[in-house]
Length: 286
Image (cartoon, rainbow, N blue to C red; front, side, top):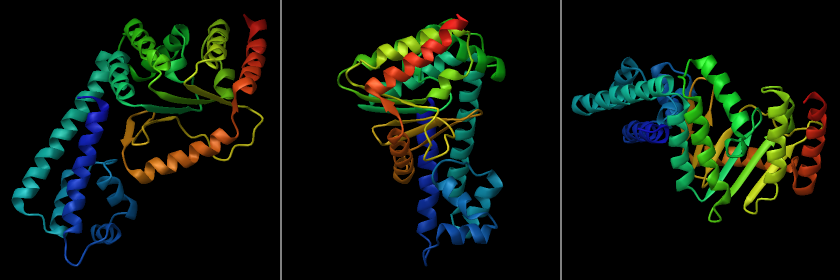
């Protein structure tokens, strides 16, 4: 099971719980349910949106309040345990199988989408990474997470993903921060090669590439990177997990965030000028 399919399963599970809640007469709001359970108001929304799983005791309390039958509760418990088992398998797969399997799963989402958007405040977007930069990123995260020893395969899988840049049926938007290129996360020669790759990428016809300059006042705090696929699927990779949602409100929020960030970004010739300056700053260290 891929990360996206596992997330879809969580969303479907949350929808099942919501269906039971809204069937209560008179209708029980999420806020009212949270109050009766002694939870913070946002917890019901997180569970129903598939972003958080209830514990088995929490599911039992939920069932008691909304009147879920014993048979339905048994089915919900069985599904909850199955989701948790698949979640554990996915995390074990990343630890033991390393990053290659995650790259291949991500490629499935890219292949299925016609519009692909990625914002990265801390690293170069995957579709634009050079092999040297990608290897440095994978090695860093493998050391942190003990995620397996598959650097060659992971780098190869990431390079394979870059074919989407030349697929004229796709529209691709990649936005990163200049600070990403100033952070010495790899040797200076590797960073210089990466910047050179970005300069060349500004000429790719169906790619919108933006770089947010260091001296621009930002409309919002650059908290973490995320991907949008066809404005329907949103995925964000955190340090410890991956969050995926299809909630239209979440998608609209991130689209609004993106619009603000694009408004202060350099594109086209302005982006090339900025990147050439960064490259010049790296050159003396080579």
